[in-house]
Structures are given as structure tokens and as C-alpha cells.
Length: 78
Image (cartoon, rainbow, N blue to C red; front, side, top):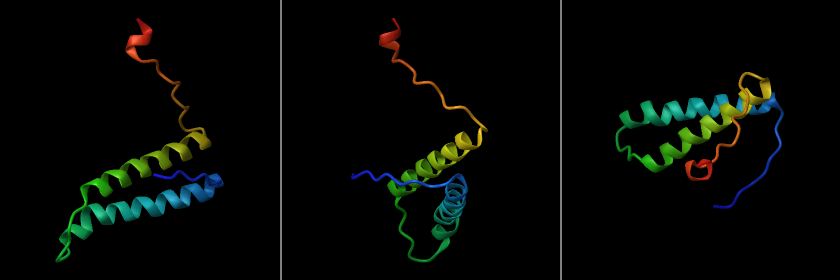
């Protein structure tokens, strides 16, 4: 999968996160009730992960949470 780098203001990222969260809710709870709906669990998992990452990025920039320090693998700590 090709990676892209984009720059957003905190406000832009927050608005994008809200829209993505609303769409995720629709995909998870409303669409399955529509006739002919075909679930795609892989895509739903990807969407949940992405919304979580976006929320974390917004929270970090707003100072609500501090980034977790990188943790060493258990084997390295021994």
C-alpha cells in the first residue's frame, strides 16, 4: 500500500476525524440494515483503526494526551 504525507491544521484534522467517525457509524450500524448489504469486515476494521489514529493525533496536538514512549520488546529488556 502506497503511503501519502499530508499536512493539516488541528482544526482541519478534527473536522476530518468527525466526518470519518460519522461515516464509520453509518458503515457499522446503519448500512447492515439496508437490503442487499454485503459486509466487508476487513474494510470496517481498517476504518476503525484509521479513526482511532486520527483521534489520537488530534488529542496529542491539543495536549489532551501525551505520546507514549516507544516500548522495547520484552526480549531486548532482558
